[in-house]
Length: 144
Image 1 (cartoon, rainbow, N blue to C red):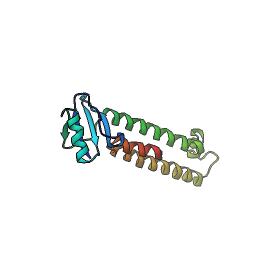
Image 2 (tube, helix red, strand yellow):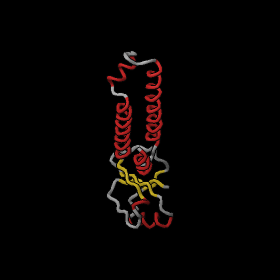
Image 3 (spheres, rainbow, N blue to C red):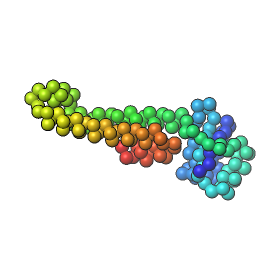
């Protein structure tokens, strides 16, 4: 996988869509993450009049990546809340916490259930934060 950047409009020319991921960076440059072989990359660069330059490293900051991460975290948190509140609506959580008509065992079971969902949510949030490509985020989203 190689990284290229350009300030100009660039054609994908001979690259397949799955071989190139395109990002807009905060400084308005366009980043291309290319996973094609060397010959295809050389042809692509030449076809675009050498208007791209290779990046030695990329820190994963792009407008699309940041937006997608935020959207997935929000979706994950909403899904987690719905799953918890389906079994333990807020009024029921309050009653169980205050042991109003419930036992300590009920309270322990509720917190075990809630904490389990929170742990799963935290693990998925960490995976979202660590993702450096839209392809990785798409896989994570499919698992949500």
